[in-house]
Length: 182
Image (cartoon, rainbow, N blue to C red; front, side, top):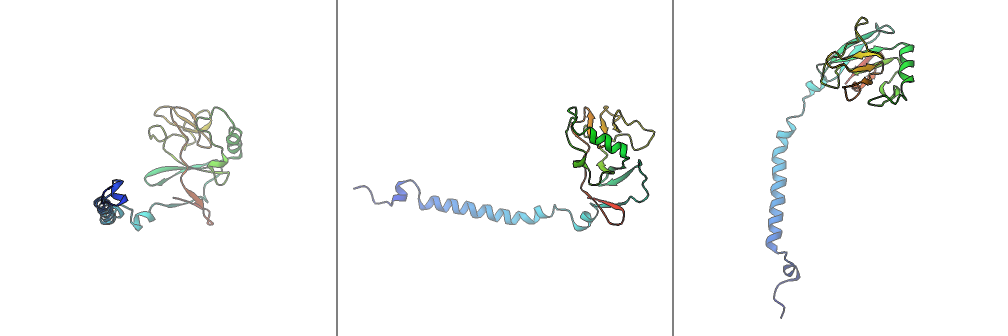
């Protein structure tokens, strides 16, 4: 005789194993349900989310002028580029010397406006170049005084140690001549 157990018991699976697995699964689901309110409370509130975007009036910005706005406690550089700056940035699109290759068109929504976060991607310094008298480096963009990174007029890093281009924040142009960042 082969024994009195079922085929499942012969394979090693028992009712007790099933009960252990079912109990463990229910405990995991119960723990997740109990912890969800605590995890959800870490999300920003509606008033904080409302502050996460800022509208900037661009109507008074002249061609060739650069302004600085604050967004999420970080400077944002907004440049109204000249046709020469745009042409230079487009001409450098295929330059094999780009450290972090990106085309000018992929970094702007409207050709004459460049919007980038004004924080060097190396160690977080604020690059110079917003003031016309400030050093802008060989490519006419921005120069980081901390370690010498240089960016072009499209915010692309042209000289190290910065590992990547200046970040482009989420933004959109509004019908009233303003830009909404965030």
